Amino acid sequence: LIANIHAKSIWTADLVLELHKLLEQESSADYIFCSKNMGVDESYKNFGYYRDNFARDQGRVNDAFVQLQASSSSCFSTSHLPLALVMNAVSHPNCIAIALLDNTKLHESINNTRADKNDDGTGYVGHYVIICGCSSDPSNLTLAQQQQDGGRATDDHKEDRCLVLLNPGQDSIPTMYVLPSRFEQSWRASGTDDDIVFVIRQ
Image (cartoon, rainbow, N blue to C red; front, side, top):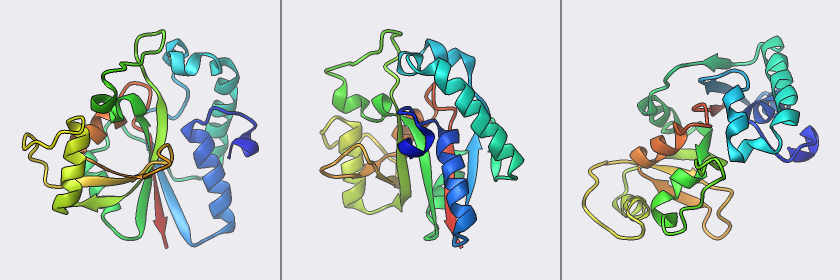
């Protein structure tokens, strides 16, 4: 993907455009892209995470959105996509989703001793994960609760399902179990636009 777009910083529009090109040649799957913003938010130039590449990224990403709109792609602007709908969708065996999260918030309880921050004070780090499904298995819920509580198992959380994520940023154990509350906090963080791409096998 990086080689195809000739850039190191990947925006969701880049990813969706490449996915669109791929699925035009392969009819075994389809996709739906949902976001709060079908364009580049000018305020992100003040985010430390985006700042260094923002000027060169802006034109490319806006052009990607224009190409997607011209190609009759399945892109929908939505002010608030309920997490329950996302969880119901990925519970189907033929559906996965790619979500843009704030990686700092995803690991907040684990990394809170470091408290890494960008120079804008946000600490925002954009990161893509694949939502493979949901689980109500007690052992998976325990793992999700331990992550929420920084490695401590507690009974403070009453959520009866967790999301199963494939996290490319974790080499040793790429599968993560995350409570819905933690996922939503990471997914709705400022900087993500609530971006999510559903991929449905036909």
